[in-house]
Image (cartoon, rainbow, N blue to C red; front, top):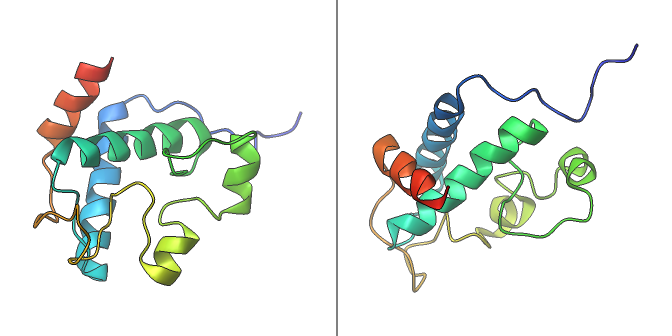
Length: 124
């Protein structure tokens, strides 16, 4: 019997993972002097996608890209948030972390868990 190496067990509390990813996003935005999208629904959808991937795959794989093999991408690590383009050049394809001069950058580095849940539940 081998232990699963690429798939995480679904969490018993998806709200907890959503809050973990919310805290990560807020902390990372502050640390990198980046801001969330002026439309908080964009931020909410991206954070929810990261949380879902963290639950399903064990890592916050970028939810805004198409992958032939998500497990292989997680192992490679290039698109695990924060992805290499974000870490190297502050380029976030998802519009989650935006430099102040970006056309869609808002002025917020925080988002409420309640807003995240509301947007997630409206998608469901």
